[in-house]
Length: 306
Ligand code: AMP
Image 1 (cartoon, rainbow, N blue to C red):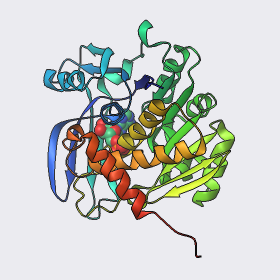
Image 2 (cartoon, rainbow, N blue to C red; image 1 turned 180 degrees about the horizontal axis):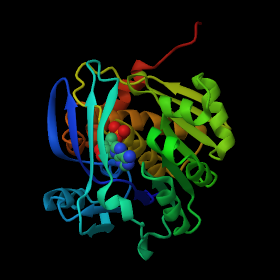
Image 3 (cartoon, rainbow, N blue to C red; image 1 turned 90 degrees about the horizontal axis):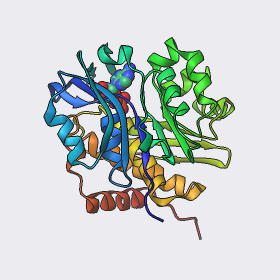
Image 4 (cartoon, helix red, strand yellow; image 1 turned 45 degrees about the vertical axis):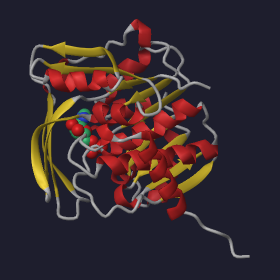
């Protein structure tokens, strides 16, 4: 089966990132950018997003050069979405310095006709009512996945719960899972989230890997052992890109396929965190993805006692 296209909505941004290993300003980022660069290793990506006239043409060209379909990317008068984040010494804790929605404030996603039959949909991290507007414009997709964050769980919970009813796969981090479920035990939280609509929940746990809760069973995978981590920004979006990209390429949604998809998500995220912004992710070669998948497979291999 040939890889099926993924309709993607999310932020395309200019980021300021401060880590113990350095800092960058006006770096090409955004939830949709990381997702697109990871997912397009496996499947065609159709982007719906907005940027301001201050967004560098070179960065837009980069997306096109990477084969991302940008017919749904609007350029409007105003400043683009800007986000700043600072990481603590162990890179696990992140403080948001600012979130300037700018052109996102008045954005209403328009899904081009040519995208409306997309079989896979990824609703990247933006306001849940914008995620819902995208879903209203697509015709019976095969798989709808959604990512969100603490900001929307706190400020737009009702809208988030509404859109989740039409989502098959929810991807979120451990803190967000606890917050959304109102449950501090992560296993209980993951299982409780299944009551909200999605039949599959994938919880990202940063350097501790990822966990799957689904109506068909549960699974856990540690992260790759990385001795050089410089900037975790975009790890979650790259993870989601690898995961959904693999599912769209394989055409499968079985338990074993979901497990492999989680492994590919971890592999793509592992490249992202090894350099600032998209620097490492954009240069990843297929043989490097295959080698790291094998590394993860060996790292997690376990034989039963004979
Ligand atoms: P991650 O590290 O996976 O959480 O993703 C970081 C990316 O998400 C950055 O490139 C930001 O530009 C983007 N981002 C941060 N906050 C938001 C938000 N509230 N809405 C949309 N995108 C965001």
